Image (cartoon, rainbow, N blue to C red; front, side, top):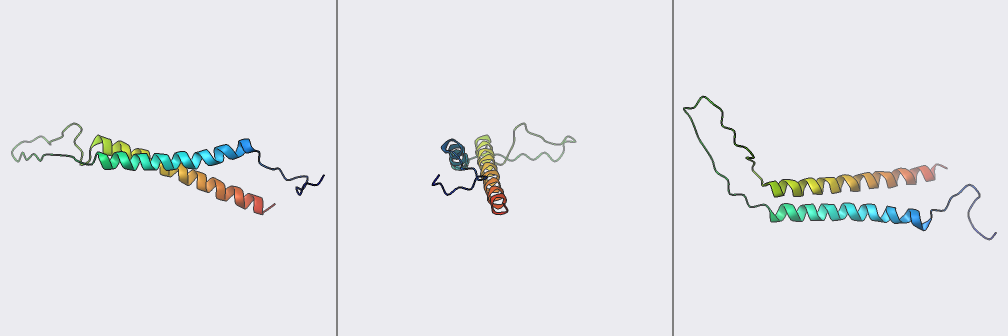
Length: 101
């Protein structure tokens, strides 16, 4: 008695609110750490090879325009952005489902 809730309305518990706050924080932390790792590993001293008379195509193992650390940092930042996008979509969908009741 004295509560403003209707009988069919469920109030979210504090235990359910905790993961809702942890997921965006983890996603944001992954984005920031990934960008920091990619920024700190951006120096790559590469080389260029030219072999005009060989019949074989040149392929170097692990040759890339960016370092492996930069690739890992960008991958971590991408995963963090995916987590944030999933969380935002989940929140918007949950809000719209509550509005239609």
